[in-house]
Image 1: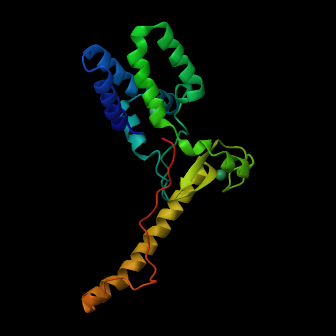
Image 2: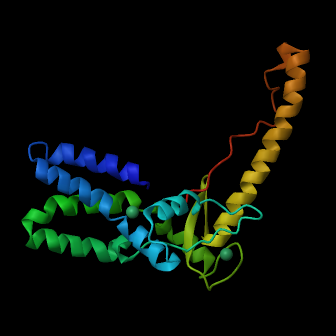
Image 3: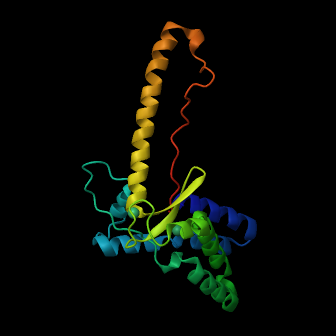
Length: 213
Ligand SMILES: [Zn+2]
Ligand SMILES: [Zn+2]
């Protein structure tokens, strides 16, 4: 999820839980957004660029598939252990149990983790089918995840997922361009023929592959 989405969700939670306690509300919102600081620290550590502006620019393109000639660096997953729910959730709950004043902050953090959860990763059938390998390149050497494409799922490494997204976008663009050309001609010549004929090849809008944040 993006920063502004976490901010909005945190503000909503603060409004529901801490309407009469401004300090607790602000702490809750802080918890909901500050977890993503690990992205910035990991980016800065790996790139050597500690400029927030540089990090913002990197965030603008890091999840897009590289185009031909795009040599901009990529630094892999920018998630630290703070984003590993199986480790972070028990720690936050322990903190909330021991320090009541930290509870608004913990609530914000837990909300952040919930919203960041990439649900396809729990698809056991996909993991079993992949048998420890990327289902695109067959490699077992890179970190893999489950990606949803429409209603089906596949286990890919990040580079393969980018390649697939890029290929699908190109083919969707070409298909929509070729589908629009004859439609434009026939629309000018015969307005009555604009409605697609029964059984004609109607292209759905390009589908996006859902990927982890
Ligand atoms: Zn996050
Ligand atoms: Zn692969």
